[in-house]
Image (cartoon, rainbow over all chains, first blue to last red; front, side, top):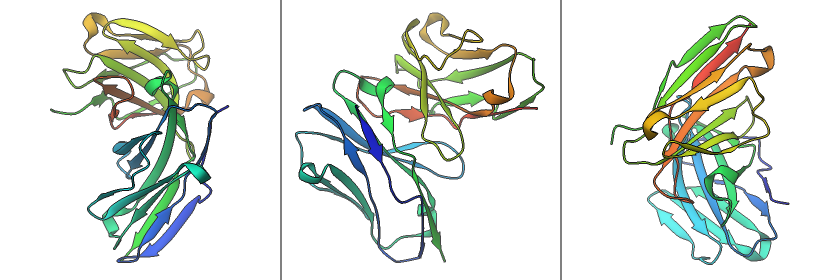
Length: 116
Length: 113
């Protein structure tokens, strides 16, 4: 069975702090995709990143970085120098190669509050 | 690219009434998805269209729910005889290919009184 666990329900930081959002997944598939989506208060889920299981390179995009470690089944997301606009709920999601988007398994999300 | 548009943004209805939501996906996207999201949860898959064909329905989708995508463009989701348990955010998303990123609309928040 597939499962995504985001153990941090809520995180509160002060602006300019670095913050890491944890994502641990379970799957028996050798080929799978991992995603992060951001859901700001407006409600619209926004795609952040997709990573396939064969690409363990870490990725950096501006203040955002992702650490994918198959050995620990984790796909953690770090925001450097957080800003108030980063306040949102962040979801980690998983699908296998055959399941595609209609079989996405979502975590419960981590609500991040960045305070001025 | 005007994004995925959903209407209405909010809908309040009385139990037993029928409601219909509309989703306009990004024009070149042939895949369209409906999800439902309740507070503190991730989205739950409801149904999926490839062009005009409804290829999959979740077991979550009871007989009171029906979705259409005529001509492979916009889609509608209808809920008949609404129940209080139907209260949720209904999200529409589209994509160009499988396993590619989803583009979501802002959702329709349904409240059944």
